[in-house]
Length: 132
Image 1 (cartoon, rainbow, N blue to C red):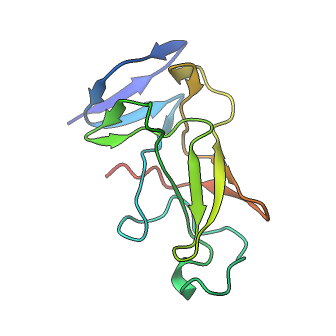
Image 2: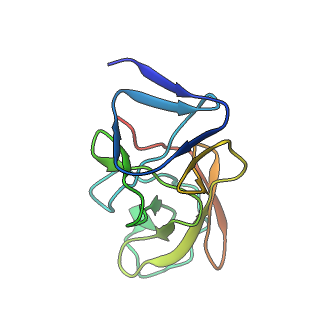
């Protein structure tokens, strides 16, 4: 499968499945990941939860919004405002800030590598797209 480049102003909506590697503005688009099964989007958050297993204290995963029905090979695309979590049990909850982008889904900016996760105590860069 090839690489799909989403550039310029693009407003996606409805149900849509994309195939291959998907880029927006030259950066990989983030897809929702499930902890601890999937590798985290970030491993660089400031540790905050002493009860979380050591391997997960600095890990952050972003989830999809139920209203977003655009996916890449079955994994929902992450958009601005989507929830994220640091650690596994218990988890610290935050929100994804997709930053500036010209590709949107239902009016929400698509998150790409370099987006950030904001939790009450830290901001972490999301540097793993989750696309395989």
